[in-house]
Length: 426
Image (cartoon, rainbow, N blue to C red; front, side):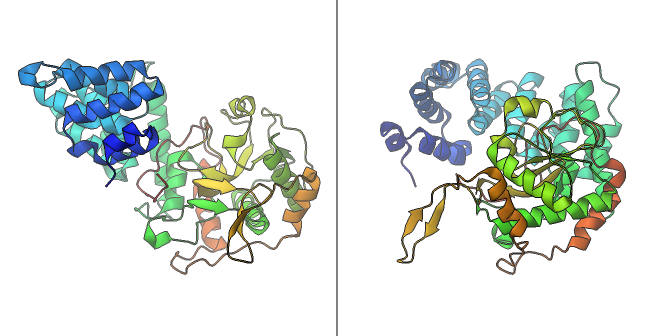
């Protein structure tokens, strides 16, 4: 096991945080805070450093930190993206002030940030007498849904009164989640292996391809590292064709986003689908907007895609599931943690067995796009452990959800992997 003090002494803040996230629930709180404070000092996070020092050095309640110090530390951890460190502190604060609903909410928020949705529901249920409809019982419904318990989410949602303006967007979002789950449930089991079904239920996205590697060994259809290939890009476009046909949609033009990778993929998609390629204009209805990876796109362009133009479809080939883009595509080719496009700089095995870095392909975008058009669709059979994924199953899902796809409402980000979990790089 890593020595956390050695990690701190060596300035390995990412390594220290990985260690603390993995071990926070079992650590002495003052030691956890001391180490977190060291990481905060090295990162220039004065708010977290000060809050951590108050927990690590307090002489409060019997020599233990008091509820205010614990709350302040937990809040600072959540605000600085280290919600896992907040969980034990907030639980300890609740032991000291069991009737404080604000602590319950902050603990539920920390667990939700860590995608520990079932635990969030359990913490809220344990204090049911304290809960108010908004936000508390909404949080029960939302986290039950994200934990995979649609029936519990439906039941909690039915008991919610109409919200005021503050919580109206959350109520609308919950309504959309439940409606999509009802739509897809006819053709999809929505269990802890149904990646495609949950991608639609959570984000309104149609997932084209399941990773054929490591499905039964922790990946469940997602890629970790992907060295992309022209044939994989071609397969995404061909499956996109299947989806559009099943939905009865006929875009009249392709609009690639202006970054280089999206331009390459967009030009290829236009050629393969027999459509004109035109400059991106987010308000244009009836168009097919093409992105390679939305996290690589221009922020202003993404802002224009938050609201859907009538009949518009946003297609993203490579969607990062560990760092979701700020808008969710209507069609996602595949889910990855790290992806290198076929024309990007990457690594390959040399003839002598060593690993060498390749240079990016700097040819004009149209010439690179032609490589996708010429490629055979790559149907990688993988390790043989991935469930069959025929085009017919994809088309059946789209046909079943057709009244709700493309989805209504804004293209909100998918902030949680939901009930289908996958292994990831630390």
